[in-house]
Length: 279
Ligand code: AFP
Image 1 (cartoon, rainbow, N blue to C red):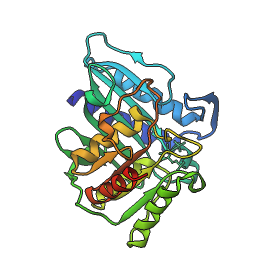
Image 2: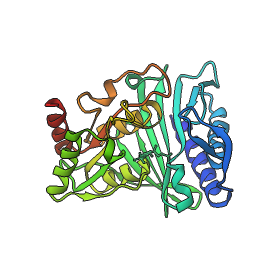
Image 3: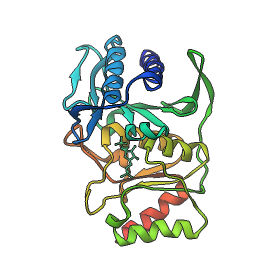
């Protein structure tokens, strides 16, 4: 696992350099979710594939930017699904973006996840790696220095509601409004990585991306976004559900499958469960 962690660190340093210096124009290509890829999306995907190609323990990779899995080393045991530059549509307005990595043993699937990691590219570059514990690292010079372990409180103060409100179910809107009525503050940038990072570091709250009338299975991808963050939230003492079920109990049929998702501290997720169980 140390070799994978090091490869992610090297990728993060190269991606930071690409964000700082490369053209951010659109390419002529679309990814599997039908989104036009930025040249930067393609560059970051290439950087990660190059770095992972040098790690013999990695069997197969799947990227949000690639239609199919790519086998790297026949004798490796790890399967890594990654989103090279999540939230890349925020690059042109200079908001924070991130890379997300789900590390699976023997095959892709929530039940096989053994570690997960994300990198936030904001005013500073930070990396959160979850294995047994959830650990925050800060890029200083060319090295990532350990900062602290991340633990969620029982209850937080932040509310990050995703999706287009006009497409929410009425009971979902009532749920979101009820948190605001209780004094929760809105914190939503449209980048999953910084939005969840904020909830993790400020002690708790709720991030939701529900099933909507236009996206009945949610927007966020199970292997590249949902499972990695579900693993992190659970290891940090929080919870992660699709409305009813634990996200880590979901299966997937295709590597690009999506799911509704709710990540948060215990108190907020219990409230989601109560509302969704009655609707
Ligand atoms: P992009 O990568 O297209 O910017 O999408 C970002 C994202 O996948 C995730 O990072 C956000 O949480 C989510 O989409 C935001 O979606 P909405 O704009 O529909 O709330």
